Image 1 (cartoon, rainbow, N blue to C red):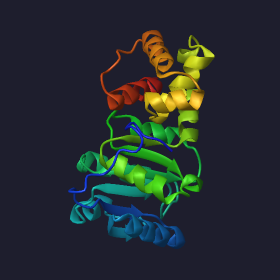
Image 2 (image 1 turned 180 degrees about the horizontal axis):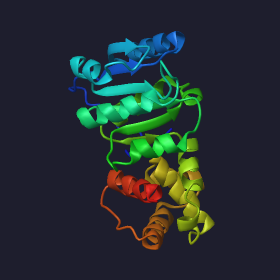
Image 3 (image 1 turned 90 degrees about the horizontal axis):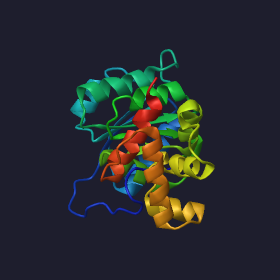
Amino acid sequence: MTSAYPEGMPASADSEPVRVVLFEDSVLLREGLVRLFDEAGYVTAGAWGDAEDVVARARDARADVAILDVRLPPGFRDEGIRAALAVRAALPDVGILVLSQYVEGVYARELLASGEGGVGYLLKDRVTSLDEFTDAVRRVRERGTVLDPLVVQGLLSARPDPLSTLTPRERDVLTLMAEGRSNASIAERLFIGVGAVEKNISSIFAKLGLEESGTEHRRVLAVLAFLQRP
């Protein structure tokens, strides 16, 4: 799991604890996540098994991040995504982290449609590391974009034609870049130099008709915005 912010960015010692609200119907997972947040020093300001009054609950809890299962009562279809979009519309400063049992590209694209940061989409079976998951929550709070690698692959495969001009190496770089990895992290994963990564990224932007931005965050969001275009 990765982000649009460089790896290892420390939280400020003077910052207030992150306030989390959780919407998850599984009692075991909900209680486990609450304990996880307590261990990480986060404040669980509310935890519920449904998405009723989600905006009011998040507002009253003064939430920094809302974490929602995709499928919640009563229908167990897309209640969590609709609730997440409602929170994003009413409380734009609240980070959104969606958890899903499966890769559901339509839901991921809905969540990312605004092209803004502060959102994440992770698969539940990937939430196995305390450090990685709590770090994902923090990065969403800091307006990063956190995507499960399998979700990124789904987004890329759903848009094959625009990427047909990319070389295999450029596709590898784009996949890692869309996950939110820094240039140094991409270089390490692909066993190439940072300079080679930068050249590939410049070529990717040129081929996709995207203007390169000066920040990692805007760069990743620009790529994601392109992949979501009809």
